[in-house]
Each structure stands twice: as C-alpha cells, then as structure tokens.
Image (cartoon, rainbow, N blue to C red; front, top):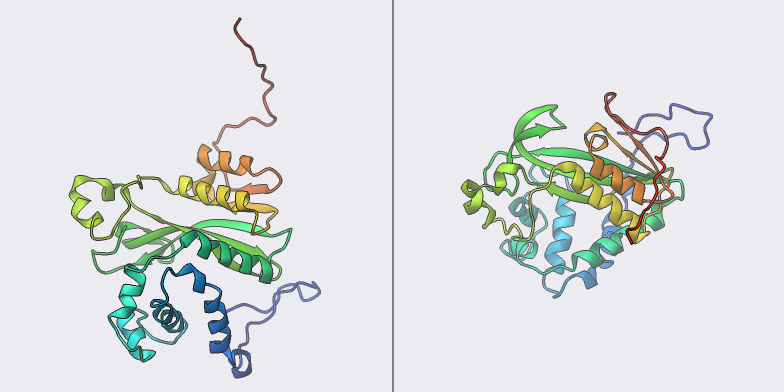
Length: 265
C-alpha cells in the first residue's frame, strides 16, 4: 500500500493508493492485451492459453497460487497442460525479455530513471525446488529454508517495475551430493557457481548494453558494493552514475591513478 505523499507541495508527490472497482474494471481485457504482446515468444500456439490462465491466477485472490489451484479457479480445460506449459514448452527468452523491456520503457521510462539492484528471498517448505537451501531470507530478516534471487528494477516518477532477475544457487548445490537434485531441475550444464554480486553485475551490463530501458543512475547495497566485479560493471556503463553503499573500511583511490604504457623493442 502506497502512503499519502510525504511532500504535498511537490509536483511529483506520491499519490495515495486507493483502488476502487472502477479502477480495475476491464482488467482482464488489459491483461489479455498484455499477454498478446508475447504471442510470438512461444514456439507453438498450444501453451498460450495456459500461459494466460497462469497470469490470471497470479493476479487472483487465491491463497495458494500453485498450478492446480490456478487451473481449478480459471476453469482450465486440462490441469496437466498447465505445468507442461511452464516446464516443457520452448520459449524465446531473449525476445520475451526484450518485449517486456520495451513496454517498461514505453509506460514508465525516463532519462533520469534509476536501476535498483537488490536481492530477495522466498520461503519454501519442500526440497525439490531449484536452489532451495537454508540461507538468509530478506522478507523474514533471518536465515530460513528457501530460494534467493538477485533482482534489478527500473524506477522513475512514472512508476517502477522489475526488469531482470537471476536465481542464486548456493555453493552446496554444485557438490556431488546435490547432483541427483540438479538433474530433475534441469540446471544447465554450462551454468557454474557464482556469488550474488557477479549475477548483479551481469544484469547491469546487459541493461546498459541493450539501451532499451533508460536510466541515469544505479543503486545497490553493500553486498554488491564490496565486490570489485560489480564496480567494474558500473564503471563500464559510461554515462550513468553509481550510488552504491561501500563498507567504511574499503580502500580506494580518490582520483584515477596516472599510468603509462611501455612497449619492449
């Protein structure tokens, strides 16, 4: 829930979040239009309907938004088709992300926008989800059993939206003891262990190189600010300014160091 604007005299004061029935009238029609933007991202047409029903279920008031409750709630013709559309269907991920970024830029993009880098956790009870382990969960503020993702979001005066994400796989997931758990989750063989800052750096570089989502500054907490690879990614983004928390004991140069290049005969 958004609070009442804290600076009433500001032209861009945050409005109160008061949703009425009139505000959501025709929501399904708009959701259908949004879904239609990604039709070409499916290799085949069969998964398009389950994909839409999954979106409807995620926006519903269901207590559990897993596949079966969503299929029952949306009166899907086949409950089995729902999980298959998510696990077995081929998607053009690059095209889907590009289309989504274009919509974010169109609806709320701004030259003085901000890219926000952070992580978040999701509590899980079972053992079968990819990357699940006992690890720090931000929403709970403590270590618990769950998944953790590194996220990037775009924010401007027009609004904010998540623009990219990476699932963090804890180091134990790369041990021989977890080999029989990686296979059922279809963890790509080319994927290797990375800590969270390199995952954040990869997303920052990708957003800057694509140029689809405009931004003037980047923000991150001390977890990323304490790692040279993340700073290298920020410095590679010529133009935007990085506003990143850095531990007070961090050593750095206040000005670029003069260097000379020498060549041997």
